Figure 1: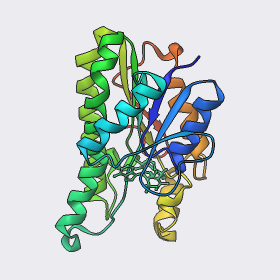
Figure 2 (figure 1 turned 45 degrees about the vertical axis):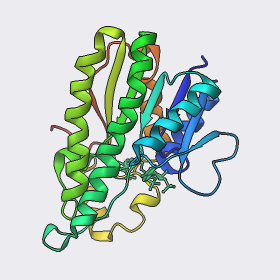
Figure 3 (figure 1 turned 60 degrees about the vertical axis):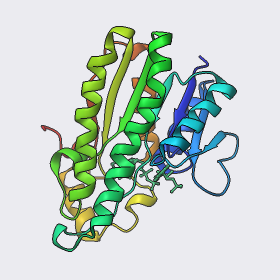
Figure 4 (figure 1 turned 180 degrees about the vertical axis):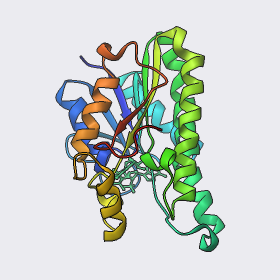
Length: 234
Ligand code: NDP
């Protein structure tokens, strides 16, 4: 297996764990990064997903280096948590622009090549918050819920071309993103899990790997929870 895989936000956290899994099975992996150096042993393309011109240039760089993107993992994301009444408009906008519109930018840029190839896999990293909601996350939850409607619609546009589009919905996963979560919030979320623990980036990566595989050919427009049992039933 040696497909051209692009992972946004693949320089750390869930994205990096996913990049390592694809690289280990022999895929040609490209990760976006915004500053510093790309991770050791991976092909990095500098890209801020909120900038359509940068996205276009990054996808072109991947096309030249590895061939047209065949597997997209749209993973880049941020949080700017605050209660709505105290939230700066800029923080609401930044989260929507990164998590949702950033994902749209990248998907739009890779779709034509996938349609031409008559094969493709797109996986969008949403969140349990997108369906369950979470206090302080009106911006984040809205961005992650928007992604679900987007992905399910796109799945219906491109399905006849053997392109699948799925959403992964993680719960609490130990990465930089959640290091500032309060103990109370952590206890609340973990209390809702069946497994009684947070997940790892590798446990999310394994699900992404499956969705990108040939074995997952009949899975599309899905929203797959990786939550340890929290937030299911939505
Ligand atoms: P991290 O904060 O560890 O990583 C976030 C990644 O997104 C970084 O690589 C970051 O790049 C990148 N990124 C952020 N903004 C941009 C941008 N504008 N352009 C390009 N890249 C960007 O978080 P996680 O690994 O935990 O999160 C990965 C995804 O999983 C996110 O979409 C998140 O919302 C989602 N998720 C995470 C959960 C968790 O509990 N950890 C739960 C549910 C969903 P840089 O290094 O340049 O900042």
